[in-house]
Length: 587
Image (cartoon, rainbow, N blue to C red; front, side):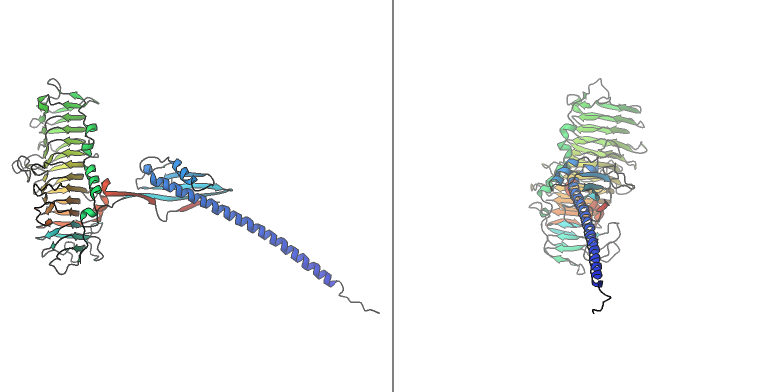
């Protein structure tokens, strides 16, 4: 008889349990895989949406780089953004926004309202229900780029005599005592001759602040650090095209002459007011009729106009455009205002000591075919103020003249201060200026003079360019750290005479001096910026094209270089700000 086994059926139960467990695990695995697939799909869609948004942002940034209207006006050029984006392949529709980086953000302000050169560029895309918004700052910056980095440069020889020196300071004006590697260098294509005081260090310091590179003989002072060779021509760096760009900018008054001064207007006759010779016997305020220009033709008093004031009588004359075919003479306590002035002969303005605040003449854009003489009142500290803006604080316009003399002896050789009349200080505020000179005579084309003591004269000028000789004497301040000027002397190397710049004033010049085919003789004062002399000028060249003597100094300040606002010397770049990319949403 078979014995019963009480474990019969247990294997079947275990098998069923295992199969159930496996079924449950299979269901769970299927659910997990489905969830994973959904997660992967979501991540893929989110990433795809981000990629499309980034592609749209790149397209938008490119459009903003190409069209910088956003610097001054609202940006509306989304058409170019769409065109650029469409070349990237099919994708969702992208929306764009350009708005200023204000705090708090206001996306309705879609231009650079705070004038810092930066705006946000933002794009939003939606792909398969996933919306992504990204943005990045775009910055417009302008830097002086076409000039070589040098405190002083000459193609030939450089001489420092007396106690003259060249040195550099930091951007904040503090002494640069960091030593090598130097911020900038003195470049000498020939021989360098120094003096016992030359240490290329800030005044009162002993650490050399600029490098020295010399092709010829080395300095006598053994303690100076220098290298030899490698100095090329200045024209290799500031070439002919860039020189002509600066010339064209300086000649703005010539190129705009026909539109600024077309001689259309009301002609003066003996019965009209003002007369061609008008000396007021009482204080007068005369204003031209609205929208009426005033013309003195050559047929009337030989085209000459003279306006003066009797002693102790102040008068103001306000014109629209004023066209004088001959000479224009303004004297006494007279204030002259024009929106544009053309003088076919000579322009003479002398100030009056009877006006407590000084005379202020606002001429607007100025074209003078002959000589210009501006003089402060004789033996007085009261200034004469002249600007080519329409208001003293306005933006000055361009100027052209044959010869320019400020407090100089124009009746003589225009090489010195007018010691006969002893004019007081003169303050001028000019835009782009071209002084043509008289190459047939070799006369001084530009003379800035002033009393040697007392109140300094001031000269503000965006760019002053000439082909002929320049002279400066007395106590004058040129430009400022915030508004440096550019003096540009470009000569024709006609070998008729030695073209020179004789800088004898005891004030400070803030800016850059660039000279070609001319000798630069700096005998006093301080040049804060840089001096560059290129191309030996003529067969009678003495061989030394840059000379510093007495206590003259050149102080290289990087702030000056950065603040030069001459379009032909600067390069404007627009690019994303590194590290500014942000993802605002990615759902």
